[in-house]
Image (cartoon, rainbow, N blue to C red):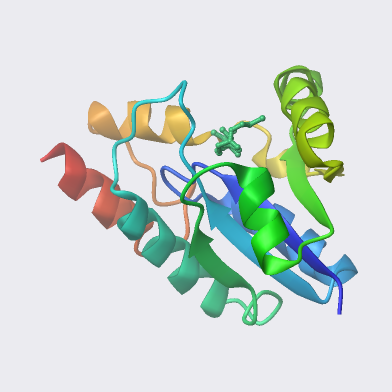
Length: 160
Ligand code: PNS
C-alpha cells in the first residue's frame, strides 16, 4: 500500500482539485486529501467545512470514492510522517503554479526528505482557482460550473 497526501487550502474545493485527485488515485492506491493552513492566505470557510465539502465531492465520484480527507494540524511533513505517506502530490495548472510550488517542495524535502510529485491538470480547468471562485461569488457571479455539487451553496452562504 503506497500512501500519498494531496495537501492544499481547498477554500473551496473545485473541479480542478477533483480532476487532480482522480489522476492521483489512478496512480496511487491510498490517497489522503490534507486540508492544511496556508499562512499566506486568509480563509473564507472553516477547515472542517472545507474538509466536509471535499469529502462529499470525492465520495460522489466513483474514481475517488475511497480517497480519505483529513485536517493537517501543523506542518505537512509531520502529518505525512504520522500517517506513513511516502510523498506529496500537487496539481499544476502551468508554470506559475510550479514557481510557487517548487520552494514548498524543496522545503519539505529539506525538513524530512519528503518528496513531491507534480500532476498536470486538465487544461479545461486551468482557469479555476479557489481565489477566483471566491472573487466571482463575492460579487454575485455564477460558480456552479466551477465547483462540485454543494460547494457553491456553501461559498454563497459564507458571503451572505
Ligand atoms: O492550496 P495551497 O494554499 O496552495 O496549499 C498550500 C499548503 C496548505 C499545502 C501549504 O501552505 C502547507 O503545506 N501548509 C501546512 C503548513 C506547512 O507545512 N508549511 C510549510 C510548507 S513548506
